Image 1 (cartoon, rainbow, N blue to C red):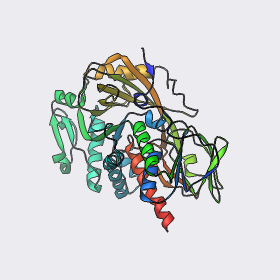
Image 2: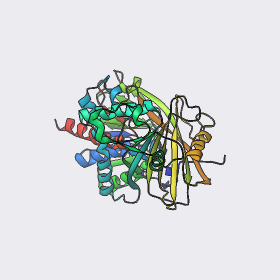
Image 3: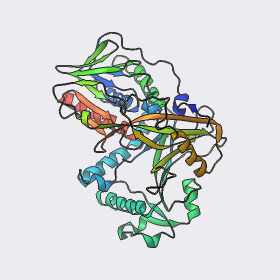
Image 4: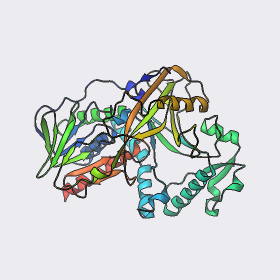
Length: 433
């Protein structure tokens, strides 16, 4: 299987340095660790909403980490169901979280308009296909809870033959419709059979490229308040009378640090109390495949859920279709498989061996349009999940001066942007008191 080991998002980016490596000791108000969409969004809102000085420190190049190695989707959702979250959070708080993430569509529009980023954001719809009666029943339960607590609800389309097999609460009657199996295949852009589907808004973007555009904008607009260092991996951060982030044999001193590191290994955190992130982060690696096509169809996004125990399928695959900025033709990316990782991630390795062939096999038997095999790309990227399934956003409850906008709970890049806005508001508010 000929495959170029590279992310198409990185191919769309230039590799010119934006910031110099950290070379001498510096002092700032806030130091941000991580130059992906979480770090650059946090810097954007801190500089916009306050008079603080901000230094962003990135281990390689801005946008070349997790933000340049993902599936390209921005979806207003989280990894856990409403019912599951009710075991640890009040319903009103869950609804507020979902509504907040949903606002990310507006936030990314605002950022792109503000910085003049007009050629890389695609607004579309994501369709999700369900394969089992169990999954359909869970989705109906999700809809009912979202409706009850005031969270966004997505209408459901059922295979017309499925209706007698599921229980539909009367309060959902106007949100459930039926369609033929062929119509479901059409909206899901697939050859395979699914028994239900629902749609939601989606924002598609190369979040690595967007991160670089944000960073350049901040350097131009705030030359006296924003400093960026690339090729500066942070080895440790100490928390005492001041915060010190150490890199390249020197350090940035600050009043506070914001971790925006997603699923990469954390720097050593030196504090008198144990940081929350120390025992709450689980690291994963996700694998993805992409092809180009001669077609130039409308952008779209899809998620496909399969019956548990199906030996041919992953629990779910996610597919993105949008113009490849290098030639304007369709770029079709698909991912799904993921596994835990404890060591340093090798972007040239397969986790596990054969995973790219498995993903490509799904694409070949499922996707309805012809793809160019000679343009196949394969890549992996890190994902950080918290144990409770809630993104880490805000102040560490135990370590003064430590803040978070990290872990990739939530589908795609929207939670990073929403989290950046929230952290910036909290830090600015704390400084004004």
